[in-house]
Image 1 (tube, rainbow, N blue to C red):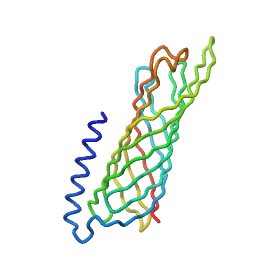
Image 2 (cartoon, rainbow, N blue to C red; image 1 turned 180 degrees about the vertical axis):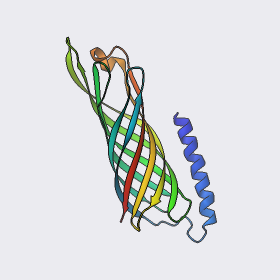
Image 3 (cartoon, helix red, strand yellow; image 1 turned 60 degrees about the vertical axis):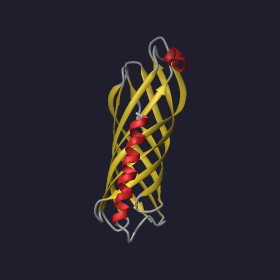
Image 4 (spheres, rainbow, N blue to C red; image 1 turned 45 degrees about the vertical axis):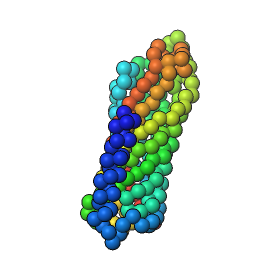
Length: 195
């Protein structure tokens, strides 16, 4: 999966380079801007033990170096997911490279890829056992999105991101009979304010 994400980012970067050539007057000049935003969306979590839809909230800050390249940091609070006996409640911080391709003055598309540092509480509540354990990890993630300008400093972002949470079986121990390997799809609507 990492290879396909890297390949997609390279292709996207190449296409933005071609687009930059067509805007010779703007070029790749250093034109920094700073934005903050927040969003709300739906997560779909599927693996052998979990299969459910939840919600998630996020906040982010973005530094754009020019019209095409930016660095985004964020925080995501995923809702608690559960199966018959196990509850998993993760949240995490992200850092991603964002590559944007302006289509018109008010509309652009973008791709991003980076790292998620997460922690979460796993709890087992049955008649025989009541246990809580904290776990953490770091995984790569990627995303695709579209940005619409609503006002001079306000944009609407619609995006899809793919995260993964892995906890080895020896870490889970008595809480679970096998390892946890959960892919989480996150579709969100976000407002972004640019200073």
